[in-house]
Length: 164
Length: 423
Image 1 (cartoon, rainbow over the protein chains, first blue to last red):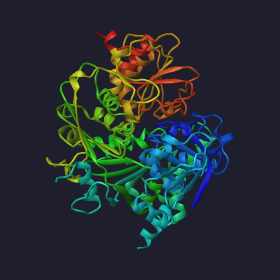
Image 2: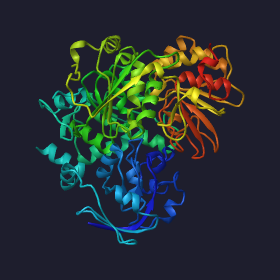
Image 3: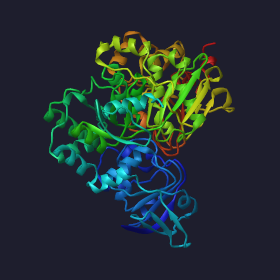
Image 4: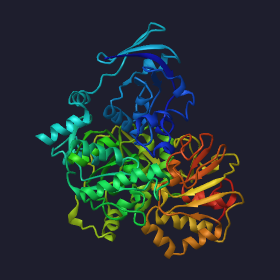
């Protein structure tokens, strides 16, 4: 699978309170949540995002709350994937469970600038900066996560387990 | 090579003799729970699977975040949860009037025991490690998976051992120890790792302070926080009628493999304040170096809404008044805490001082309701996060502290040490 779009760059420790503030957590409706995605860190986020665009960030992306509403909001806003130096662990799990592709790459996170055109080859874990021509490698997805994806996510895995 | 306590619990629950770092295990869960914000997605997961919950005594549903219902949408989320509880006849559910903040309620009511494996759809589930359980927060879908299958998958974490030695200074409690620790290692200092709290100063630490410490393990990126059970633990459990033969005690081996050992001299720790906008911005109160005027003080949350927290606040507020134009909001974390505080006359002290006392709820901690901050406002809060916009306006500022510092600051109208109120 390939993703392509423009990058929108943020710093370290982007927490779930800025990804989707708790004041909007009185619903889990994806399109409602998407309207407020990243609102407290970048009020123009929703306006500037075009389908396929990516979030690029530093260390510890998605820190804080366990709210699954964070990856739901990002995905529903049209973002194709998130590239960061590292992810907070609950957000990491939640992204897989919600089907939001995420990639760890310090080189990419250091190098990519706002509005750079990026292409990601998800299967090969290769990130290409079409604006500068640079290529970065993402940390491979752990084997088990790949098995989970193959089983159809946690839902498919639960079905398999319950039918054993 | 021996194993650390977190490893041992994961090994036991996945029916293995040993588990190693990085290994992925599918383990049996002893308790899985969710709250009114996270439960609807978990409920949906179970419903879509079309199955029953794996064991209705091992799941809990706790409407604590936006209850009493703050608006129509919140009411609808609570209704999804309540309808599910009724349909599946789930006993562990508490309505307004009974409910408290999940991480205060579950240990208080004797649901948490040493050696358990606990997952909760709330990041502060790590609180329960204070009783020697392995407890970690997950998303709603992961908890829905546990509701349906009784299992959850875990990547076995490396452990960092924190050794606290020395004597606590006056007004220094669990909140100060953990803020100091996060200040030292940073908000990603324990990313994906288990934080094991040990040392003489931990053995001397009361259970409620231990709960406060483990509560904030997530604020250093930790997967869980854990304290080996000891007499303090056993006494806490026996007071709740938890029988000794109903749980198993796990302790770290002498030769356990730690990714790091961090020694902390408690003698050097003074009351801590974490400056906006990260918990790692912790400083000793004498090191702040400027007057920080406040608009609001909040004493409550799953971090510091327990009876000992309210007692300390009352000790400081007694015969004092909250400063003009400052709001002091006190929220007991559970109904039992509420009743006990009332019985001890703490509410009289709070109300005389000019505070407002609310029914148990997470409320303002996450900017839900019951004390939202306006643009430019400053709050001191006993909660766990001071992220941008956490308690309201993204242009507001949150300082984290213990109940002692929050109470003293409410009186002064600026952040001060409790020593300035009670010498």
